[in-house]
Structures are given as structure tokens and as C-alpha cells.
Image (cartoon, rainbow, N blue to C red; front, side, top):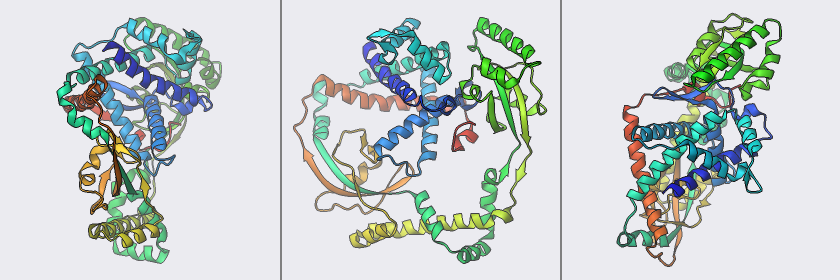
Length: 494
């Protein structure tokens, strides 16, 4: 089991590291440094912004590969999924520790030494490891602590897989399912994309008329989305971070001494120059410590409180956070600002009218689908620039369907389609989109024998399901807070 666990974690970590190496051409800040922002707190453990941004980058890369390089307006959905994945990963690590499932320092050391990306001619190269740590803005202690969590989580995963692995006599049906390959055509409808198309169709006069007739709806939308039209107070600050591993008393004492020495030096020297020289935050170091503008609640509480209480150009006393010690200088402040409803009334009306028309359009499409009116369906699709795509062959026992996603979201409808009745009479919903399916054909290969690999395959599928239930049970009693300001944001941290 230990070798299997190590192999699985190797694939996950190796992929993440390769992504960072692939992005070395970007400024380091684009990898999500900013060592004070957080995306969630799970039972008092902060999940930093950089982990979130790296997870989003990996998910976007996978999504583009899956859907032919297109994001299709799914950026917001992927950001939400990335947060959920990080929260579940942290819960899994915490639950495994509660159940006395650990990984040792020696395991972590051996794991790092064996990673090919840190090797040269088959031998571990310390310089490559240090280079990677500098690029992602982590200390060796932070990276190795995260690796311990990954190893613990995968060990739990492997335990569930072993427990759920069937005997040879139980795999006949599963083998038959794997041998059957299906192919479907599909059309993907994204409500957000349809809304944009409908919004652009409307003439100004039509929008004005609609606005005058739907004043309450416009007012309600304005109130419910006040963050879009009312900007809270913001500060632009720069900082110098001296990292210290949380709970390591010696490291914290050394970091405090160093930040005090820098504080003495900053009285006679430029803050930005010293940030470039001393700061352990790679995301802002290249910009002389500049974090750009941010609102309340975006940074960890201690940093947030200090930044918003400082006058412009003043430098804080050393501020302690989970990341270490900071010196903070506020460069600019922006007061709260509001855009009155009257100024955005037409903009909101156009958006709501587009949404209303998109809903009506989808309802019209659903009626055509219910009637299985192929000619009318094709006409509706053509008028909106949509066309049929093809999944390619996939097995009935597969986890996911090419270009579609989770098998379970489509199984009910697919089970009703065949050569005699190829077109679905209702839409399937998955990942915020609607899909119309059409059966294309099937193939049957020779059934696999109930060998070890097939039984382990089935064990993995069942083990994943049981482990998900275990984590979901832990979520019910966990304290989880998410930083909605960051999740909603479209870009990185400034």
C-alpha cells in the first residue's frame, strides 16, 4: 500500500510542480504570492491565496484540454470548484490526523529526493529544489508540511480503496460494463452565453421601455448586487515579510529580531528598496512590496486591521500573522464610493432583459426537445451559432465522459437512448450548463478477465465514493469560512 500511495502522490505533486516550471516565464506575482491573502479558513487553518491560484491554474489547464482550449464562460464555476477542492483536501488531512494516520519526516524526505523534477542524471539536485521553492514563495518547511498532508490524505484514500476492493466473483458485471463502449453527440447550452447574445440583440428603445415597466426588479437587482455598484474603502499598501513557520518558537524569535532590524533601517532608507532586498513574499517583492489596492477582509485579520488603521505614508510596528512578521506602509487610501441606481438603471435593465429572453429561449428549446422535432431543433441551434459535437467512445464504467464531465449527471438520460430512439426528449444538467444528447452508436470489446488490476480499479471507484462521504460527514461539524471577495474576483491579487 505504501508504494501505491507514494506513486499516486508523486503523480499529483509532479503535475503541480511541472505546471510551475512551465510558468517560469511569467512574473512570479502571477503565480499568486501575496503571502497575506487567504481564500478559506478550515477549523482555524488558513488556506492561502497562492494555493487557490495554483489550483485554479491547474483546473483551467485541464478544462481547456478537455474542451478543446475553450473556457466557455466557466471561470467562475472553476474558481468555486477550486475552493471546494482545497477545503476538502484540508479536511481530509485533519481527519486523517484525528484518526492517527500520519506520514513521517523520513517519508517526506525520501519522496522529495525521488521526484524526477528535482533530479539531474538520476540524483537529487538541491539547487533544483531550492529554485522551485523560490518560485512558489515557500520555505522548505512549508512545502514539506503540505507534502505531509498530501501523503496522509492519499494513505487514507488507499485504505478505503483496499477495503472496497471486490473478490474475483464480484467483478463479472463490472467487466461487462467496461467492455461496452458508447458514442454520443451533444449540444451544450450555457445560460450566461445565451444571456449575452440576447442582451446584444435589444435596441435602446426596447430596453428603455422594459426599464420603465420593471422598476422594482431593477431596484431589487441593484440592492442584491450592491458590491458591484458600491465600492468599500480600499488601501494601497506595501509590506516586507520575514517568514517564520507557525509554532516554531526559535524561527519566530529570529524573524522578530530580523524585522526589528529592518524597521530600524527603514527610518533612513527607502521602504521599497528594502522590500526588494529583504522580503520573503515573492509575489510583491519584485514590485518593491506593493500589494496594490485591496478592501477590508481580503487579507488575514491581523494584517487587515493594521493596514486600515495606518495613516498614509506611516509605517507599522512589526505585525505578526500566520506567515511570519510584517512591516506595512500605506501608500494611498480610497474612500467608499457609490454609483447611484439612476446611472446604471439602463445597464441593469439590459442585463435582466437578456436574462429573461435567454430563459424564454431555453424554454422554447425544451419544448422542441420534448417533441423531438429534429428540424426545428437544428434551426434553433443554427440561429444562435450552436452546433452538435461528439464525445467519442467511452465505457459504461468510466468515471467521466469526454467533453461532458461526470458520468452520473448523464446516466439516466443516456440509458433511454438507442438506435431506434437516438434523440433525448429532455436536457441534462451538469456544471451549470444544459446538454441535449443524441445517441451515435456503440461497440463491444472482449470482456476483461477478473484480474488484480480490474479488481483494484473497482476498489478505487468505490473507495473514492466512500471517502467522499467520510469527508462530507466531517464538513457538517467543521468550522469553514470562505473569503468571498477573492472567490468572486476575476484576477489575481494585485
